[in-house]
Length: 600
Image (spheres, rainbow, N blue to C red):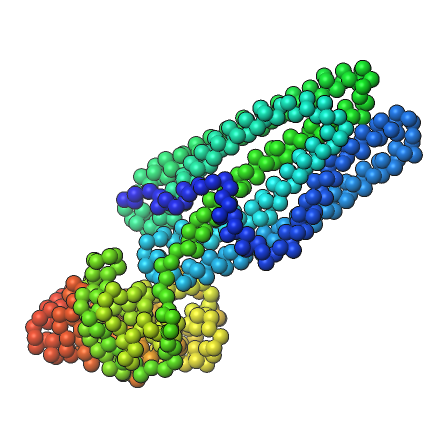
């Protein structure tokens, strides 16, 4: 029933663990917060130095104070150690606070940027892009960058600085023992390189199977009614188990590499300590090195391998961030946008004359869904468009609002080509009532005015009263402030339709479009809507796409479409007299109605 396949091609992007081009683009979002970066670098340098300072102070305490029984000097060293610990804790607090603050500010800006860009994209983009993928970009992928900015980059530098400071202190104290201690480093570098390669492959598989899992879940939750209707729960569960098992295996493989790598690091760390004790202990016995240096080196060895382990973790953060940023910038770079012309005009006022001149339109290349469309609607006229499913009726609405740009021809509003008009000013003059009403989480009032502060409560109440929805709203406990659940789940189809009528009316459009607006409502609600339509259409240019021919008989003009072409034009009586496509459609509906009467 469902393919169960992921449409996650772009979710499998891996790229490099570090990509300088992507990082330069990310740094654009860091620039406004460079003061936080400067503070982070300053704090990181201090914190990374304070850690390696402690073993050096320990060496002084053992060799200079304990060995000479200098209790006063020892107390001073202890106080210095305690002060260093407190100072490090305070700086670490500010470092964490400022890096997290910077990360949150950056992802806030980036999330706004992505959402703002998504709103500018034309409907063509949404036709080919799954909703789940877009949501993932704005949420998960942006959040992955938070880890990079708030802990990844800064902590990578912190770990590197710690290693550098350890090298400095070690070579200051004894360069020979330092070389012996670091003799395990080539093996560690090779193990880290191998680990990075294996984890990279495992991570790619994890991302791939996670994308499949998310896609499957999204698809089946949305289509749960179909799954249950056809009793396919067991079959779909088997498919889910297979995808889930692949995801689990990929994660286990990733865990396996970590389980091998960290013991190897511990083994090398212990080996380094053993070498220090063997080589350094021998020199202590010979009297060529002090016990304090030996003790400090053991501490440095334990301290050295800790950032090595951390760097392997930061590598994953960096790799995740690079993959996420590549997907984010791929979305931001998408130019599927209906642009305004350079010298666009504002449609401040309009009479409402609409004209299509030799219009051709295709969603895909040369697969035309509208062919040589020509018609004119005078200001204040009501024109109905009828035809079978797929005839091109809805496409006319899409191109009139410039949701898509036409391939050939012209669409004129009051004699001005709509491509010369600024999009927002064009769309503000047009209201659409769709068959499938979109409702947003919020209140009934916010679903009518869509949060527009310029629309007063009085205008909302008047619009609701005009379309007859106020009778239903007034019976609700909180009236216009009644909460609307996601997709308007608590409202009936008819109630949502009436609210959408009030929404269209409150914006006071000069051009009104009704797209199958009464096809999903009961007879009583349809009567309310028909009464509202009479008031709504007065003084406005109206385009009515109708399924029920009985609702358009009083239209000034009816356009009959078939396979993307206009086949007939005229009023109701003229078209019936022609006995063409409209006549056949009317007969079919008339017979259906008569049959329903007989059945009832």
